[in-house]
Image 1 (tube, rainbow, N blue to C red):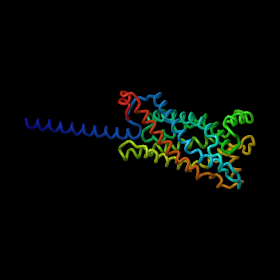
Image 2 (cartoon, helix red, strand yellow):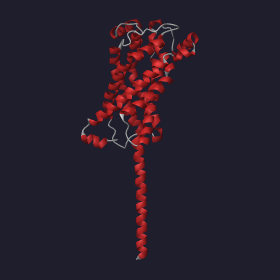
Image 3 (cartoon, rainbow, N blue to C red):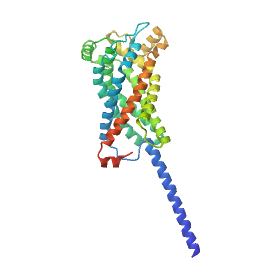
Image 4 (cartoon, helix red, strand yellow):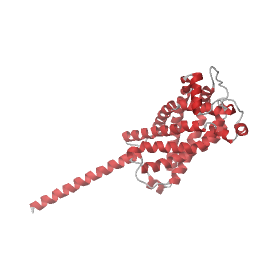
Length: 320
C-alpha cells in the first residue's frame, strides 16, 4: 500500500502545483488587464456615452473659464504681424459666446472618445493600447471639430478686436463670407487638432497605465492632474507651428492674405522668418499645461462621481 500512498501524494502535489501555477497566471492576467483596460465586462455604450458627455462638458467649461485670458494673449501674439504691439485689454472678450461652443464641443469629444476607446481596447491586442488611444483621440477630435471650428473662428475674431459680441460676429461673418466663413481654416484646424487630441490623450492614458501598474492602485486627483499637465505641455509645444498657421487662416477674414496652408507657411517664413512659426509658444505651453492639469483632474473626478451615483447592482457588476 505504501507505493500507492506515495503515488497519490505525488499526484496530489502535482495537482496543487498546477493549480497554483494556473491561479498565479490568472492573477497576473487580471492585474495587467485592470491596469490597461479593466476586467472583462459588458460594453455599455449609452452609459459610457452619457458619462463622457457630462464629464467632458464640465471639464471643458472649467478650463475655458479659468484660462481664457492666457488664450487671448496667445492668439494676439500669433495674429500680430511684424513689430506690432500686443493689446492687453479685454482679455475675457468673447468668453460667454465661446462657452456656448466649448460646452457642446467638449461634451461631444469625450462622449465619442470614451466609448470608442473602450471598444478599441477590447478589439486591439493589449500591447497596442497606444494605437487604440491615438485612434480614439483622433475620432473624438473629428467629431468635436464640427462645433469647435465655428466657436474658434468667432472667439479669435473677438479676441483680436474685429467684432464686439459673438452674435454680431456670427451674423457679420455669415453675411460677408458666407456660411463657409464660420469654418475658415477648417483644414488647418484639423491639421492641428487631430494630431493634438490623439497625442495628448495617448500620452495621458499611457502614463496613467504605467503609473497604475507601478503603484498597483487607482490614481488620485492630484496625480491625474500632474499627468494631464505633462501631457498637455508636451503636446502643446509640439503642435505650436500648426496652431500659428490655424490662427493666421482663421483671423484673416475676407482679406484672404493666404491662399491655403502651404501658402500661409511660405508667407510667414518668407516675411517673418522661421521663428514666427513658434509665436506664442510660451503662453500656449503654459495654457495647455495648466489646462491639461485642470481638464483631466476635473474629468476623472467627474467620471468617478458619476460612477458612484450608479445603482449599487450596476456598480458591483461593472467595477474596474
